[in-house]
Amino acid sequence: MRTKRKNKTNNTNWLENFLRLIFPPDIKCIFCGKDINHFYERPFCDSCGKTLSFNVGNRCRICDEPIENEALVCDNCQKRKHYFKHAYCPFVYVDKVRQNLLSYKSDNRRYLALGYALLIVKYIGEDIKNFDLITYVPMTKTREKERSFNQSKLLAEEISKLTDLPVVESLKKNYDTKAQKELNYNERLKNIQNIFSVINKKEIKDKNILLIDDIITTCATVNACAKELSKYANSISACAMARNKLHKKAENK
Ligand SMILES: [Zn+2]
Ligand SMILES: [Zn+2]
Figure 1 (cartoon, rainbow, N blue to C red):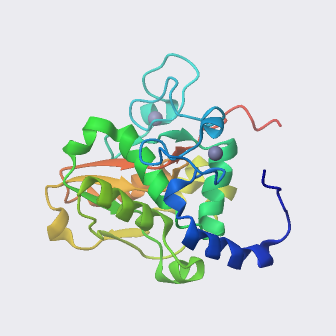
Figure 2 (figure 1 turned 45 degrees about the horizontal axis):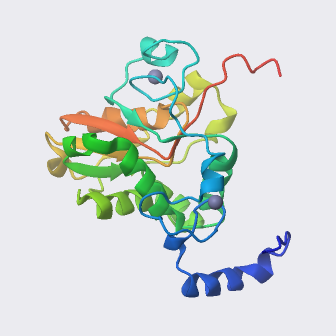
């Protein structure tokens, strides 16, 4: 049995890197690190599998947001024009999945991307044949340097290896915006207008694009990207590891 040691980050960094050389991460559960022998089929162990927030209930036919009633399309998609046809998100952004994704970004755990890609590709299923290429939500160069990697680009590269769809760098982020999480839906929409522009227009002309993000929260980001891409492309669908559930009645907490 392994014992958990907390608050030993500095000491465990080198150890973690060393252990990763001996025990490649693609044989371990992406959530708890336990050895598994079915990584490419299911990159998580059975006990994690029992607690994961799979996005399997009734959900919006467009943006994949979980819906509590029987509606086919969520309130936001009914009210607002979306420039993407469909979003694919295998998980709801809560609990273990949320913690794991946060750690992927802030603790630089790039090795998780392969497991995420496997889960996304599996979730997309047969629809994958509808796409000609993959692109991703860009970061500004400054932000990418700060963070040392673009989490969506890395996911796109892993999805490309699994599907043989090429990754095309087709969007540029022109400037950084205020932290999105402090804003409400309308403020978010305003905040991200015109921050993306298309590069490599010829390569995406008339193509069916799969746009990659790590998490879809309000759809504001993927929609802003899709709006720019839709000026040249034939169709855009989006995908991410997880979909945030909007809590409309949670404000009084
Ligand atoms: Zn596990
Ligand atoms: Zn929706």
